[in-house]
Image (cartoon, rainbow, N blue to C red; front, side):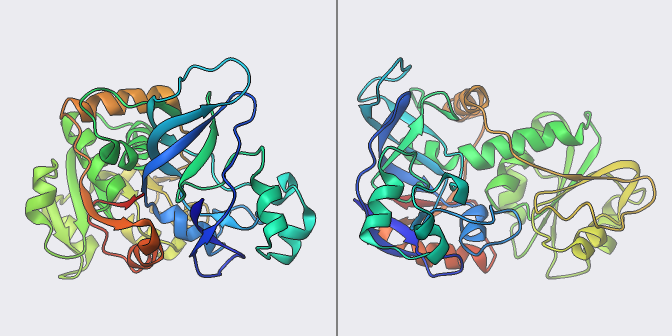
Length: 342
């Protein structure tokens, strides 16, 4: 089958042929029709801190998918062949679970390593024609009224937005500064927060005022025009109640964005830099970690099917162009979700 994979950390993703995986006990095999791009996809292949230290190679990229159940593994299963499903894979397999130590140690994509790493084990990524996934993991049925394309774009962005909103614990009429608000997580977060009467200040790069307003943002700040902290003080002289930073990759950048957060507030980052950040006095730093669940997927999918939650799709790429899509996302400026079409 076709897949986008890397043969070693920091190697360039490329289109390869690997064996079709066989579902194990309690697993399903899905014929993938759409995969969705997330920043963690390129962060993982580049070996950034949030990624496991070692992997099974070749490493197939991606975690979010939608498609149809093509085969059921042995044992009880809540799905049937032909079901339309979507979900989020657990992520790349770490080296201790490798079928052969040589494949990981040398990071070479030999035919033997490929066959061994994929046979009878969950496929490590979503950018491929077929994947296997445990039926009791973060995978669920696509509800009527929701397309497979939109379903594929929902898992990571939607679940992260919902869990982030719970983590910052804001009430109605309180204020939330979202840095990097134009991407998939930010677009979903703005809608969910606005639905709770939370005042969303969206920090973006470029002219995104109309689009962010349509998603529920009360104020949109173009960070290319002026310093963020000063711009926030203009619209919230007393500061904001919480920060969600989806962009800063350093503790210094995160701390600078947290400057407008008032004492007693929360500053949350998705990039794992809160622990070392020098935050304002009285501000609590939070390193967010996603905990995917099928129940949350069902709730989000119902909202998307009913039109309550919009999942903005920025652009589509065919599978063979996925490496270019990853480069585009890595250089910044995402506007909603990027979808890979298989």
